[in-house]
Length: 340
Image 1 (tube, rainbow, N blue to C red):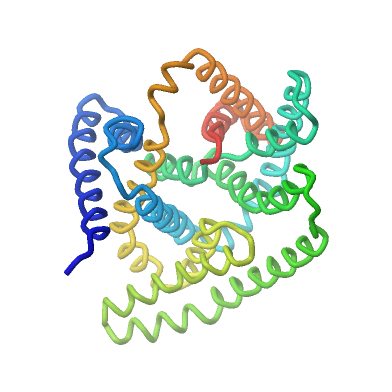
Image 2 (cartoon, rainbow, N blue to C red):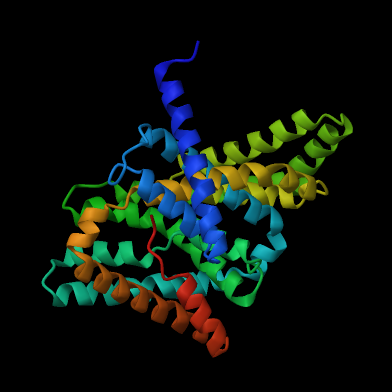
């Protein structure tokens, strides 16, 4: 017999699905993005409005699975060669975007009276963007492989990597003693190990494994192998101090080198579409409507400043990379969100 927690989670999932259907139908009629519909679903059902979702933490776990599957599909649609082709966007684009944004926020924060450590922390925070939101919107519109889609992807990959040094520096900013030297060395060693693992797996291990699995003509076995690879690689990068999302992206790259990549992505797409909806619902649940309405002017002004600042810095980086005005504007707007 199912426990009360199981039934509560089951009830919450039914509420999310049912409310999402109604809101998405309404948003479809007025031609608004489904992403916005899921955000509104979470806002309405969340603890700050109706409060009809009880297992919030469980929904957040489902949301994390959605992010993993989203980044996996992006990785499968790419290849190691294509990733190498956008290395300039990762290293130059991502590096300049994070550095310029952090520096601007740092000096603005100092000007309005924050301490240097707080100012630098705010710079780190604002420089990062929401990988899941940006890539979902790009994939939804089929724009992942446009020039601005590739630049955005390169910047986001760099952000997912640079977040580790930022985390290592945070205790120092707070005045807490840290063994950051040892941590940084270990991080570099783990990073090199993961890169070697990805190359060997993509070149030799995964093609041979999927060939043997495919010969069995067992769909369940094939699906379990793909899921094991995705979650295993995501866990591996998480243990190394990197994000689960980056690991899922690397798992996609590994499988993209196999002749069975199209079959893999075809099997995973329905799961991705379902679980990624939980991510946007969970973001919507964070929205405190009463707090927002009580501070609407300040919050809107702050959001406008952040969007303008990040759009300008990302657009400037795109211009430095040699792209025209239209691409700089679209890239800037895509990367203007803040990491959630």
